[in-house]
Amino acid sequence: MAKCIAMDDPGQPLVSNRQFISLVGALLYLATCTRPDIAFAVSYLSRFSAAPTVPLWTAAKRVLLYLRSHSHLGLTYTHSPEYYFSVFSDSSCAEDTSDRKSQTGFAVLASGFLVNWMSKRQPTVAVSTSEAEYQALAQAAREVQWLNKLRSDLGLPCSPVTIQGDNQGS
Image 1 (cartoon, rainbow, N blue to C red):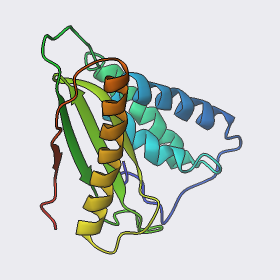
Image 2 (cartoon, rainbow, N blue to C red):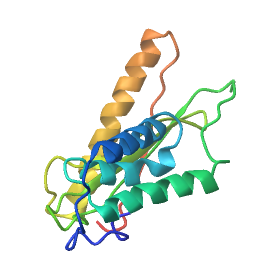
Image 3 (spheres, one colour):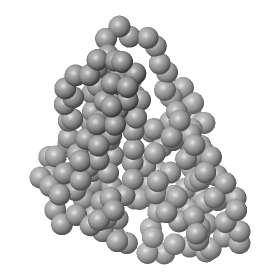
Image 4 (cartoon, rainbow, N blue to C red):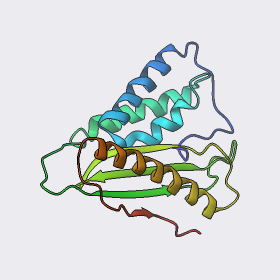
């Protein structure tokens, strides 16, 4: 999404941002509940809720077109006799030219089914790719700790979890 919109020339401001905020809110609900594939795009669009522009409105409508053309995608769950976690983490390093903050993302799978995911900007500016990856891994580790605590509270067995990070750049 960042490559599609040139933020150096944000375009004409919208007369009212009520429709933009409503659309981004609906997309955020979908990204949170059943469509993690749009999480990055929605995260990016939500940064501009205070002053949306015509190109941002067009980009939000493009996400709707994507959802319509890929309606077969989404999360489905079935029962599995095994219960284990697989965690994947990644980050971008300073790709947002407006403030040089990195993007963090992770996905947690339980027995092969996606149960938790996140895509958001990191709170601080990372000075290297390694630091951006470390921050992403740390966020994923915090989520795993919380999920293991939840499993323990529910009486489910806990096992060691390996977090796989994509750190080719570091």
